[in-house]
Image (cartoon, rainbow, N blue to C red; front, side):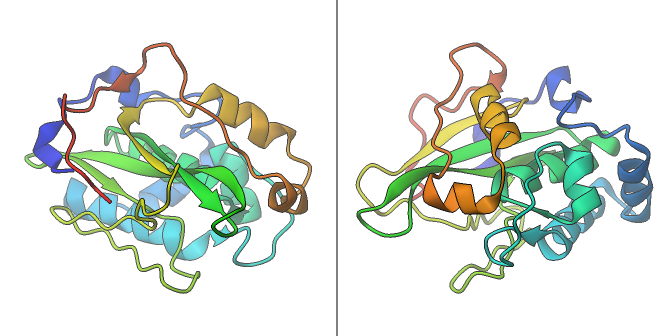
Length: 215
């Protein structure tokens, strides 16, 4: 995906919501500490902080489950989707338009279950939309950096049935939020990964008519 191929964001990509609760005092305080000299540096600071300071639940064998951005910050851990909620909240606290992206991946091997993987997209003035993945580089083989102009997502689409959804959503998928909020612990997720589908309603930035292959 090239950044210029998607249209500019609308106001929805700056919204404070129940899940992306960037007006929470702790998020506001952290956002202020991550402010850079330019919006681009601020966006990178926020990305690096979430990637490196919020432990991926599976990588660090954490059992707590969080969904809301402020809860992710409070407990210091989250699945990829939960980490994306916090990162988007930090960007929006700086009035940087941002949204959510998703993949459907095979979880646990070639013959295992599917899961929904979440990552982020940010609008950078003069550059356009940039997709990036702050899930954390603590899993062998993953090395995600914030490098506008060069997309490096955590997971390429390589196995049958996997899919990268090309759109950018202003809100996390409702079915995903419900599943996260209902999840008792990460052990349950490992037994039965969350595998949901995009909402039928509007609320996203449409992809190009013929998106390029990002596998």
